[in-house]
Length: 90
Image (cartoon, rainbow, N blue to C red; front, side, top):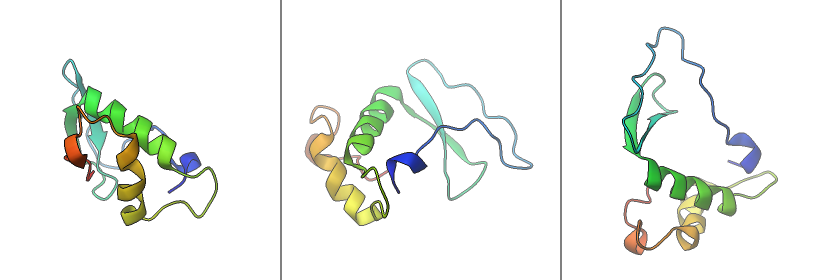
């Protein structure tokens, strides 16, 4: 994964139904491993993780493995939202 491969999309997988809008303070995200499966997560946590991930990702290939990403993101996460790296495994 590199910065250029991270992008927002509103495209729905074939046969998927449109997801419900997120409640206030929530963000609806789709699981890339299970097309059409969405979940609602806290917007503040999502934005903090997104910011940390974009800081940690290299600009050029080959990017990071999942294990490397876990290590690289940690220092960029706010301690009040992710104490000791808790909940950072997504």
